[in-house]
Length: 158
Image (cartoon, rainbow, N blue to C red; front, side, top):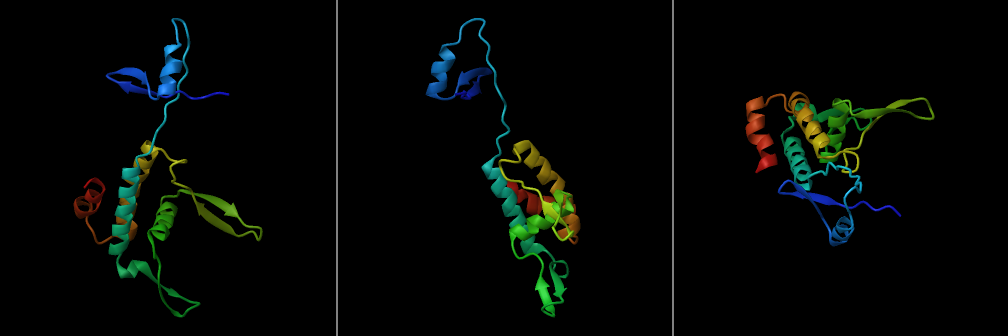
């Protein structure tokens, strides 16, 4: 059975990460080959901060954007009731979706996942960076980029 042995770089040199890996590493001799993979591990803290940002955006979306007239209810309804509903719309606005055709032939857009398995840190940072102008344009059109950077983006780094 194949097992990945983890190495961590310390002072510019690879060192086995776990005791079991140290044992395997110590068995290597001159001329042996070693194969490795690199991983783009997503920061849980950065992930949480992005969702904190979305929660704050949700609180500040103007009523004219966040309400619509529901024909079925014959009343005004809230468009984005949660961070999840806001995230779905954000992904749709960013064209991060796949087209699905139902059995009845109806075309629907299915937002792609941004979970840890599907998106490492570098891709997630790119996603967050590309999301910022869309958040401003679609959800917070009355807020300047300076205010957004100062009061909203700072939430990700406090």
